Image 1 (tube, helix red, strand yellow):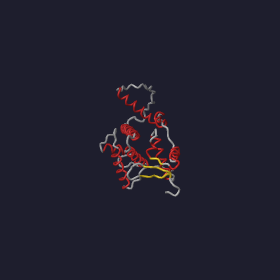
Image 2 (tube, rainbow, N blue to C red):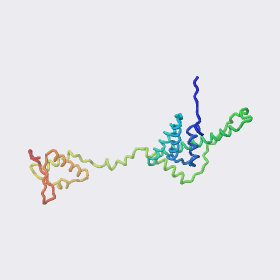
Image 3 (cartoon, rainbow, N blue to C red):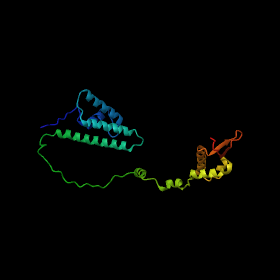
Image 4 (tube, rainbow, N blue to C red):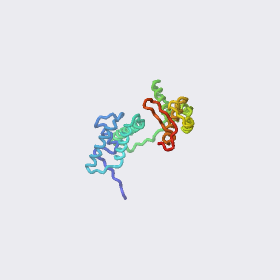
Length: 240
């Protein structure tokens, strides 16, 4: 029959016991644990155990990975998960500390301890919330909860009204427009093509149409050194 052996390493049993010892030794605040400092002290102890050729239980390595993850999350800006993980660890440490203190008190009780047993009595709990909070605290908590809820909701339709309501001009329609202006070998200045535009979308579509026609060698661009005006005309067959 196989039996599992458990070892007590130095003066602690399990990772929570080790963390409590490190917090007490370094005089850290258990209600506001500096995760980075605690992780450094914890890893030093793990490495010391390895140097002593001790078999490190998986629960110690699991706690190390947990602390590393908490430190990584805490580096992110406005990380609510980091604070939640920190509070969870604090609660576990406080609960473990209370249980350890009670175990020490019970271990000192000898006379008649194992002979007198009392069944647990039924207790009716009053679930009425009786703590009185300041109005500013309630308002801040409500706004925080409402803000988290709003971030999970899709954006309202009004956010897209200005985008959807604007008429988008297709480049293809402006290509036809430019070619018609150059029918019969005529010439047109660049500014004349923009003169009748009624929107920014139409201006952009006209400019893109000119670029597409130049790329396809369907129109040619003439510039006069003495004039900054750009003149457009239909390109000849052999002209590049």
